[in-house]
Image 1: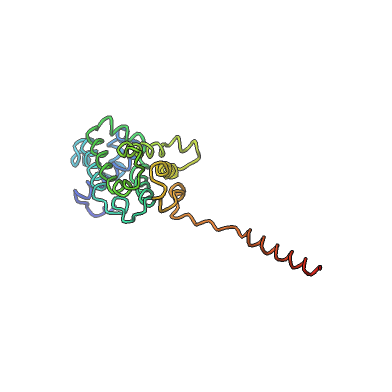
Image 2: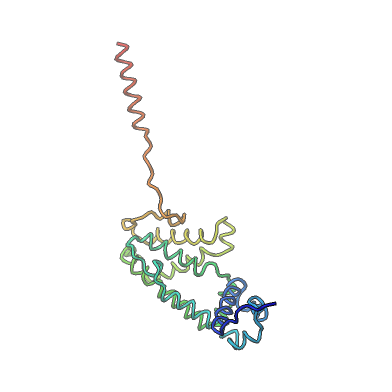
Length: 236
């Protein structure tokens, strides 16, 4: 059976790292077995250890890539161009979902317990990622609330909003729970007069809530009154 083109060490390394990242996200770091990882991508266990001599090296390489992505990301999640605080909240929450909410709880538990330094570096990267959102929202936050505390509360609220069991018990997807949490925090933190958009669209995850149209009841009433008056005049 003819073999495919020989892959370079860099290509194999990238393949191993990608497979490890995908499996660790689902089942956790501890449950990711090197032999199963090797079988997934069609290489030997020895090849994996030649490129990554320990699981710790795999975790370090994976987290370095994730942290680099958080810090260097140039999309609107990290650098919101709009002055709309609602859009800023929505963009950051959506970014959190795409990057973190789809990772299983076992992964975070393993990372924090077994690799505390890497976990701390990742949390620092998240805080740096919050910087643009803080600059956008801070001028609009209520002056009677301690800002540092409110930002810590924001992260805690978001983390609670994506709790799998909580979302399942309430018939929500994790993204819906996340966006609802962002909405609740925003409504309690941002001054009402500075909400240039409608936070309902954050909770619903839609781009825009259509303005409500006034019901044409008054117009109908006026028409009915006019017809009644005409009938009265005709009856005289």
